[in-house]
Figure (cartoon, rainbow, N blue to C red):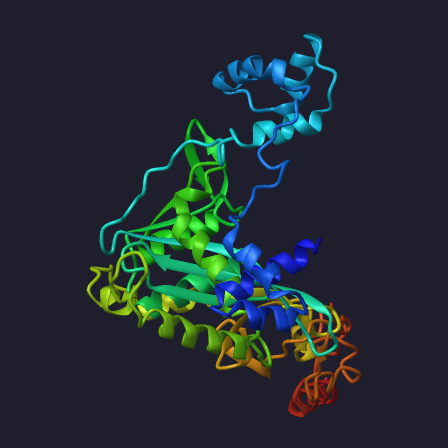
Length: 408
């Protein structure tokens, strides 16, 4: 008797159209053996189709009743049938229930499409990259997508604070060329501090920002991320499509590549709408951008100068003239430079550094500090004066007095 492996090879070569003689010579068997398996139908294995009895069989009607009641928790079912005499393990119960379990026990969601210019959705996503030393770093990615046109904006930052959020939103609105009527977000602390009687309590800075820019903020329902499903999918798209295999020098370079990527993917028809997002965006009736001085207001951040003359920005310490120690200054990023202002006056400017923990010294940072004992201005002192000052008179007065005395 030949082995099952040889039988499989015979049938494979028969299917290739080879003759019995050629197959027999190739496999070193008789051509009559090949003919036997050519003429005989494929027989079913003796054990195939047979069904072994299971300890679960007597309890399947009871299990079916529990499943009809929406009970799919195998531990609950296991305890229930165990009380009725089931002696098997929970493993075969799980295998049996698996075929009846719904894909996901969750309410269905209505698909929501907003009108052109009506809504944008925004969110943060935490992405990862590996540096040249094979060390893994986390980097936040701000994402905003227009609900109707599906036009996208991506920006990577060092922080997820309120300053970064407002700056990214301003950049997104300028990229889109206008402001949507509504911006939908989740319940991040930089946006929402709580609820009171069903009404949102907005973060004061964000509330002022929304009023200045002109959009209405809205938050999605708790534990319902599908409410802003467009931006949720965009974040995953960035992680799965934009980042893998990408090389960049620093975050500024990564952001340039992100904008190029947004332009490229938005120049193709969208898989859902069938429209080209950038073309559809140009037809959206967005609100006009506010005045530039309002937009620039939200590109600034306040920083306190330390006693040794530094401000901290994105984890890097930048030098400031010692005369501004302990003062609050304003900073902004402009064309890859960090500008530091005292009110409206530019104090100094540094080339942006992207490696956290570094110190950027300023040339002449401590010039004159020793001579003035560390005081930018002298403190107010009391002054001593000579209380017993002698009155001075012209000499002719004394001559007159001497003449009177001599005449007397």
